[in-house]
Length: 219
Image: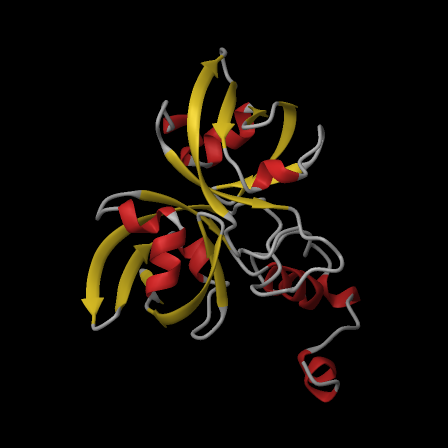
């Protein structure tokens, strides 16, 4: 589990491609301080497992499923990526719940300066947009961000200078693909309520959880 608060920008040192998978070697410093074999690291928002490591880098296997759902397959030597270690139970929860299991990708369609902030507009499929609400949370390349605006085709976020400085969004351009992960809670609530189009809703009439019940209990 992650929070979407990026710890550092890492560098791809090597990419070893297989038939339908690959192995990434990533150079880092902060995340290497206590990383152990088998630990989880979010790489541009994708949860990967450290399969080998030394004092300045770690390697992780990227399976076919992950390559088909994210732009990780486009990474090359020298590419920059956002890195975050899994959340410690005693740590501060500065972002929102991020699983590292992305829902799909989006395309940056506009970047606009607004005084000291920078607005990014991201086009996404309807299957992703359905879980996004204004002032809600979204993870873009693993970065926990607040949705400022949403339309039927895209959504926008406004980034403070610190976020631009500490993440790879500063080097993204119009047309760049980004990983997107929706708020996990929204998907669970939809399934429990038996909303049309959600997974596992063949018999929604059996659910005893209703909108009225959630509202009456403070949700």
